[in-house]
Image 1 (tube, helix red, strand yellow):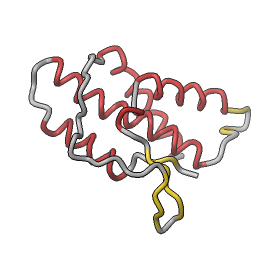
Image 2 (image 1 turned 90 degrees about the vertical axis):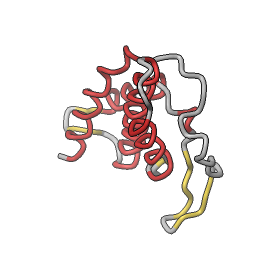
Image 3 (image 1 turned 90 degrees about the horizontal axis):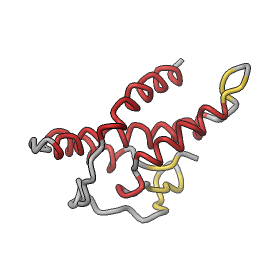
Length: 126
């Protein structure tokens, strides 16, 4: 059931796709990009860069999930689903900051939430 909850959150996040702005700078300039393959306790960790968290990437992952649904549920491993969710959640958080920027509102919490996500959760599960 956690997968269904994640998909519901992802679907809500898709509503925000239409509101993206053309923010060209980094929302997280103080977050040093991790090496593409960093060693962790769990093994290799393939980081996802801020520039890779885009609307197109989130839509691509959503299409991937839709294609992988079979008659008996998901025909995909948890790692693939979790990685897709990272791109969708990442875009949802990033887009909130982009909307605030477009409205000339302070980025504050929006940017800090996205940067925390980028630091703690933005990596490929395998």
